[in-house]
Amino acid sequence: MAITIILVFILGYIAITLEHSIKINKSASAIIMAVLCWTIIMVNDANPNHIIEKLSHHLSGISEIVFFLLGAMTIVEIIDAHDGFHSITEIIKTTNKTKLIWIIAFTTFFLSAVLDNLTSTIVMLSILNKLIQDKKTKWMLLGLVIISSNAGGAWSPIGDVTTTMLWIGGQISPLNIIHQTFLASLISMAVPALIMTYLIKGKNIELKPTIENNLNFNSNTFERNFILFMGIGGLLFVPIFKSITHLPPYMGMLLSLGIILMITEILHKRKNNDEKGTLSVSHALRKIDTASILFFFGILMSVEALETIGVLPQMAKIMTNAFGDINMVAICIGLLSSVFDNVPLVAALQNMYSLEVFPKDHYFWELLSFTAGTGGSCLIIGSAAGVAVMGIEKIDFFWYLKKVSWIALLGYFAGIIIFLLQHFMEQ
Image (cartoon, rainbow, N blue to C red):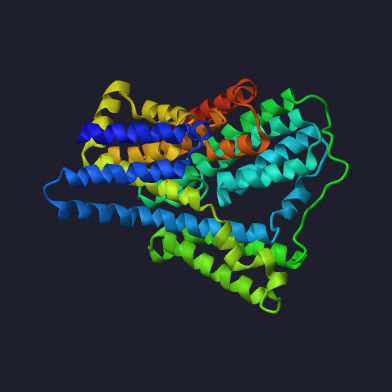
């Protein structure tokens, strides 16, 4: 039975990795993989009720992540529908090369910590398409956006799916992960940004002569800024709500979502349906990336199936014996995340190493959060941010490998060095 489930998992993983080659959405592969794994377990178990109890237990934990992501995605869609991110474009406009590079790096870094690395990358991609004239310069800056967004998501409990998973799973706490990984994440962004200032030629960067804002004329300046403020405030409120009430994070996210939905309805109650247009709540709910939600669900349920049959604890022993050092385990997982999706990698480690082995806020979980978040920048296919840029801008895999990968790798190892130095200095 175990061998059959492992084979199903490997085949499903290959299908997910080759999504763009085989033209099958990774959500479909993940869901089929999950159902097949649990079907095999059920058919081969003499006590079906026991398996159903385990399935329900795992479903409860995974649902917390799903509802958290649904709430966050809807809030972001509401902000975007009101053109709340337009003010960021005004901040970035400058022809000075050095200023532009650092503004883009820092804006993306902090934006992804509040939103998520995929959303912040798409926002910055839209802005750079309106600003930058030269395609190669824009591609280099988009490489920096990928690196900065992944680095920014790594130090925030709501900035990256894997960090959120560790937070909900009880492996990390918000304040501690910020304290332990912020400096390392900053360095992993700053080193590539510094290198970019020397690689991009000239003192000034040519901007497009005319910038079309493409604003939604059904929303005014007050509404744009107000919804942006409320949306970001609602996302930042989630860790505060958990620390006060001790309720799971998804409850705080749903509370923030409910408040923002109510505010938008009140804000536009005097407008007719045509005037509301994309500003309506129903439109935001239709635009959320449901396919990604289903992908996370399928992947996490598949990993839980491997944990149920006892495969992951055995793999933990093998990895520990092979590397002999948990630092190397976390570093290698980060590099693997540039090839494979970091969600199943982190989910597997959560099940491989229990809280009895590495308790809450152990530095292994913090290092894992950093490496899994930033390691994906080393290849353009290694993160959702990179895949989005590759798909929209048609950036070639080998161009990124030649021009950006080595820069991301330097930032990755610079961040690890800073993380370990900070850890040992605080001992």
